[in-house]
Image (cartoon, rainbow, N blue to C red; front, side):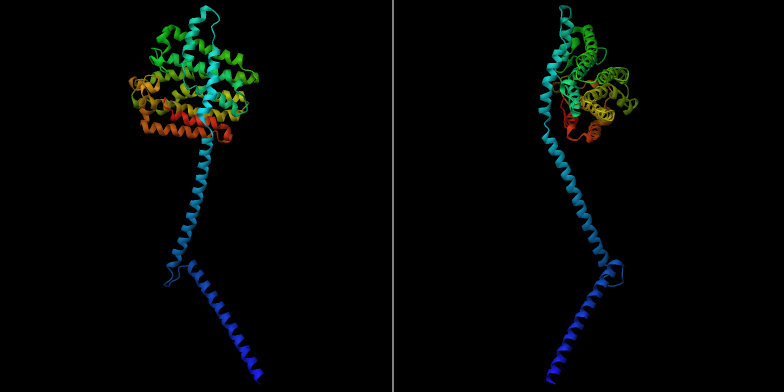
Length: 384
């Protein structure tokens, strides 16, 4: 009897504990179900306002984490860009290129008889007067970006600087901008007279084509011909000459009579075209495909326009000593400029927009485009 009673007590006790556990589990299930119901629907109770608040807090936490992740990724991208920029030293690159360019320019024009000494001296006076040598450097950099060599593109680089120098000699003439200072020195016509200055410019232009055709080696002749054609086009009616004529026609006009489209046409042809040819020629000589050349041309068009915007800004903000040419000349002649149409802040914003677009067009070429990208930044950051 005692044993049976003890056994019964034990069984009842075990059953009671099991029932209590079951009840607790059921209570927990009910509580969970109730909580989920409160979260899912706006029930009428004292706790109802807590549900949307909890959902809002949960959503806010998720959004905050997403924003933090995006910000972290953006920071990582910017750090990578900065590391790439820091890894590429533009000054060092320019020094490595300008030396060989100067040597090639000096060797490109030689007097072989007494009768040619004066005109050769005049040509070299302006050709070797210094300058940034941006066009030759762009040509060399584009060629190397596609696996070409400095030797393959140097004749084109020299030709580009010959054409650019011709344009400066003619631009400074009394019949055009009538300037007596260029690169910190008296202009060509001041030293040699207008007649010799005009003829020196003509000789530089014609010699540029000869130099490319005669001196370029280890390149498919069809590619050399393509470069010659592009050089010729860059100084024609839809190049330097046409841009200069339109520029002269817009001088003295009221601001409302000159549109941004007019200004863009002038500087696309007067300034950007030769920069386009510089980059395109280098790419062609380096073996670039048609599509790759087009990407390079888009880059150069935008930096060419940005170059002119920067020039217009410097004419207003820099001194004659800093510029190496007469400051404030554009305002004196009522010339159509970007600051005149957009204001200084608007012109600066336009220059930055153009550079940003230019750099975006070279994204497919990755780190190989580093020199060109750095030059794009330099173009609007320069002081002269």
